[in-house]
Image (tube, rainbow, N blue to C red; front, top):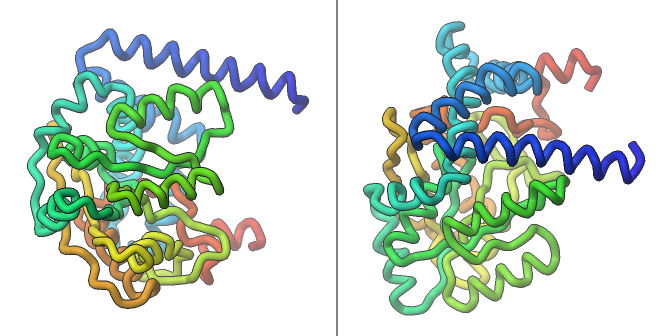
Amino acid sequence: MTQPSRRFGHWLTDLIVRGFLKAMKTLPYHTRLNITGWVATRVLAPISGNRARIRENLNLVMPELSHSEREAIVRQAPDNMGRSLMEMYSAKEGLPRFAEAPIQGPGLEPLLEAQKIGKGAIIVTGHFGNYLALRGAMLGRGVPIGGLYKPMSNPYFNEHYVAAMEDYGTPVFARGRRGMSNMVKHLRGGGCLGIILDQRINDAPVLSFMGKPARTALSAADLALKYNVPLVPAYGVRQPDDSFIIVTEAPIAHTTSEEMTQQLNDSLEAQVRANPGQWMWTHNRWRDAGNDTSEDRARGH
């Protein structure tokens, strides 16, 4: 594809997305969540091949599931993704709800104490439930969470995507040398940083996740050790009425980066096993880490 045609394709795609979002915002909050969840499940998931990816991942790490249990997750995961996207673009209605979400567990007090004394802290979560609910709830308690994001390849979409993220707390940092530098300055200056740990990173060490080898970045633990700040696992767990409960865990003890990161993987695994339909199973999480799925065999990998 030539550069002009690629630019036009990006513009057209973003025009469609903006039109859909604008139409959805004319509807009541819960109606737009329901519609977006339906579209993600019934339209986008089949077209994109996400259903096949979800089944492959479930067969790899949760083979004990019955057919009906697996197919329920195949429907629930895209639904949660669609709802989460619409919640991102519905800060006017969503942020007040998230700010009032109950926060459970022993992780809140260490975060508030770090904020009180001007010390940085790191919250680690995953693509589970909706991490924006976590950011909104902490913002409501006076703890804004800075975040690192991967810029979208579509520059037109990226513009409003970043703006939507900023509605739930600032600053946000684009992945890259400059973004990482500013992120470290934020942490050293006493800011709270949010890191999403569950994406496969090429050449990262192989640890265990859901009982299988998975390449996992050590960066969150490295930063916690280097700057001596709390490392707290936390999650925004969706409820049936689209409210959220924020679950925080005790800070991970400072040992080695590998041991700490494995504990973070184990923490997320427990959340995923408790509510598997809330995790983003569409990630190619276990590839290139010594696993062999039927999809890999079919492709000759």
